[in-house]
Length: 528
Image (cartoon, rainbow, N blue to C red; front, side, top):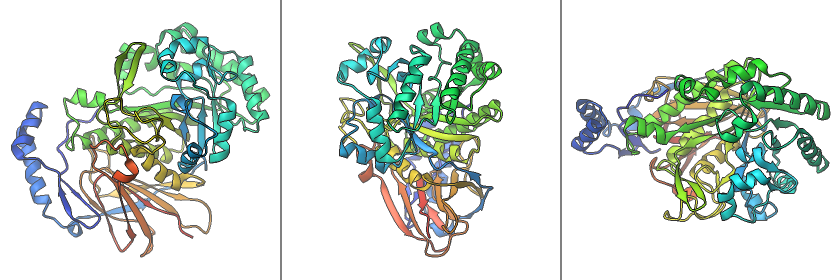
């Protein structure tokens, strides 16, 4: 599901209503849109609109009206992180690393992470024999990798997060998995959320050899779930579900994935939840639309991200009343680069930009609003590339790109830390509904927001995203004059290697309708 090529929104206004031009020369804009198959006259009209709009003062913008929806119960540990490979090379007992993790306020940490969990030997704190072969490129770069239960315990204690255990249902055994959970429990790690493997809907040779189809996985998952419930009656057990970005194409070209949810659900028994991994592919979208990554394409990328999240939510309804754990989500823009030992994932132009941060923020708020979603783990806590909220090492974007500061927050990390500050410890959350807001290509609202409560006697906190390419004037609900606010924004296409310094932070106090600049995350902290 993809939005059509957009007409770009024209102007970005800062908090003081100073217009910043976003349009190029009309002839240049016209040539670019003709190359992309869009009528040149439409592009020319867009730039005429840009020129006229730049003269407007923010006070003349129409005021967007906001209503608060019905609250949902929100688990206080709703927002967390997938750990994955970047976590396996960190010093989990070092004060600097633990401080960086604690600052992100994770509700959960998923151990050991994604696909590596299908090859994990918890006793070694590393890969089993099959994993050492599959991940030989990673081990070539990081031969001293280790990530054991003691490391996890240190991270949980420092951050106050809970563990989500992702078990090895590919090369491991039920007896080994039970031993792992008993060992964790003996260390004082609560065994509450347990996931039965990772992404078996993919048609990789190892997955297909182990599970010929969805029914064979469902039979094994049912058997494991029944045994784990006997040993750990307090645990919630989740089985593998699939997000299918293009269902019609998948049924023809990827039938295992396209039909996975229906077939697993029909044969599965005894689980408490289903998992889903939601990745928005910005690179693929730009390629399909024949677009370059520039200011003009950002609204289309954001519109497509919102459409993909709406599709994921519709697919969740196929699980009936079962809760959904979104144990991985993010934006993808990487591609494969050959190396002597295999391939390495290399970042694309959108990776590490404020656009990626906006997409991840929009995903997070959309998931938080959905009452079927029990937890959301961003991929990833720390990564070598642009997936991480924290940079694992200095070469996050490859050896030919400017270095970054290890353990610094990425653009997404800065945004997620802001969102976590509102969601961590919350008990209720309500969606915000907007009247007269601008729309993104594809028809979704460009404004996305939530109110969040932590208990009685405390005024709610508020989060709002303006995904439009121009400022919008919003009357925020239920907030008194003088209420403090903060806004974070950045140039959407610039790769941020020092995001904490490169993202613009504005603060002020509320006095009537608030002008929210283009591409901005607004936060209003809890009061009381």
